[in-house]
Amino acid sequence: MSDFELEKRAIAGDDESFSILIEQRKERIYRMAYTYVRNKEDALEIVQETVYKAYLSVEKLQQPQYFNTWLMKIAVNAALDHIRKSKRVVYMDKDIERSYTPDHREEKLDLYEALDSLDEKTRTVLLLRYFEDMSLKDIAETFDAPLSTIKSIVYRGLEKLIINLGEGELLE
Image (cartoon, rainbow, N blue to C red):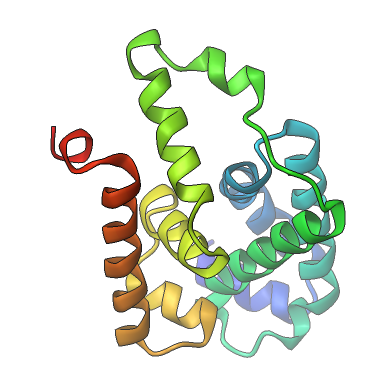
């Protein structure tokens, strides 16, 4: 059965179709959550919250083709809510530090620090675009914003990252 059929059935109230769709997307939701909180337990909690909120409101989704965009929007909002509620500084998890090769660990840490220095919306747009490989159109739909606005946010965000990381490091 195609994803579109599963999406239509999930919207119509078919729990099994909803479960299949979530199962297919749970890793992507987890990765998105982890990029925000950098903590396994918190990321799992955000995934759980995302699935719960999606399950409660799936029947309100009017167009099945936007299921992924809708689900990622819920995930992003759940991650941001979690950060606001926790009111704490987010630190890099030691497990992720160990998973990087020694040559690139410092560069990855610098990138995360540079991303953290961006405003919330810019960071989210860049994460969706470059970490989750979402199209600009899908990101615009997620934010209910014009495509040109999202392009501007990406362009300005990348400029800020270049400044924060130093031109030479990004161009190498």
